[in-house]
Length: 164
Image 1: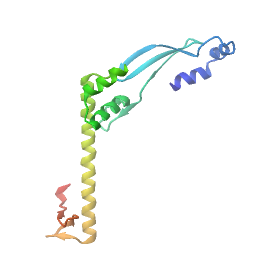
Image 2: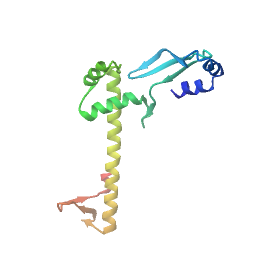
Image 3: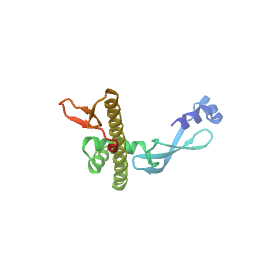
């Protein structure tokens, strides 16, 4: 949308016609492509006739390198967080007249989010384990020469190097 506004602000043909109060600034030509809930829209300047297209959503890159449209990721993420799935999303969006992604796109996005979550969780747990081990060593807390900390209930957690 920034591209449309920037063009309208800098188009000399448009500026001269505005003075005559004879036109709208930009005209929607149509949708060039649709990617699930994201679209590429095409506009034409009513002053000079230049065509401008822009995406209705940004792209987000996952650590795996794969890129997805952020509106599609948000829709899938929302369904995952609330216990929904493809069918509830499709039903909700159809009531609003909003196109959704294909079931295969939904599943691919869901699998990518799942892998990303598990990778983050795995790294977070390993980092916490390394920190607990460091604290046990600093405090001189060992059980049979293995760094150990006590839980709130008095149970011992052993921090062997092979744990991480």
